[in-house]
Image (tube, rainbow, N blue to C red):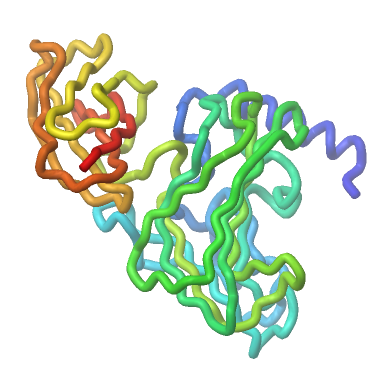
Length: 300
């Protein structure tokens, strides 16, 4: 158990982080797993604790940096988590990581002033012997757990696949933590096989879909009708740039339509008759910065 002095220092540190955070969507530490720290015998992703720190073999480490990443035009790395029951038939065999240091397994680590409603990202998973992977987030208010959400699957995903999980009771949150594991079991939290999980580009409220989407502003885009079927009207708040790129992405992060438009006419009319039914994201970009985004549902 931490001493009261350590708890106090921890709270002061997080409070300062909350006060100095200005980006609405940039709080997740090292969310694309691009920055790695030399830990002597292994690498750890900056801002994340890994099970590597509990492994003493010096030869096998469950969490590693991978050059297999997605989207391919963003960054160079992803995080790879691998169980290895042959080397460690115990908890140390599990590929697991969470934000912060070791105390981040049950304490808030980073601020969420934007009050997110969902967590998005990309994964690949190769399960063995019934292993289930898990990504979960917990939200806090004044260091009290107020909600969260999780994504679990035991299905193979041999190509990069988008995931999203809904976050409950988000409105009162001021901070959060995230955990990722290549093995999840309520009854016995031990790996059953040498399963491998890749994760990349975590983000709140919508997927990261292109290298142009590197800076996010408050949502300044609205669409109607929503749901839509043939034409979509788009308004871009008080944004005064003359030219704008509007892109529509599928839930898997694939760009399906794109327009270069002038914003001197309002609203902007987009023909979406060629899209199949489903949920999409529409994104407004100017000067390589996202100035607005929102969901739109297409009816067929």
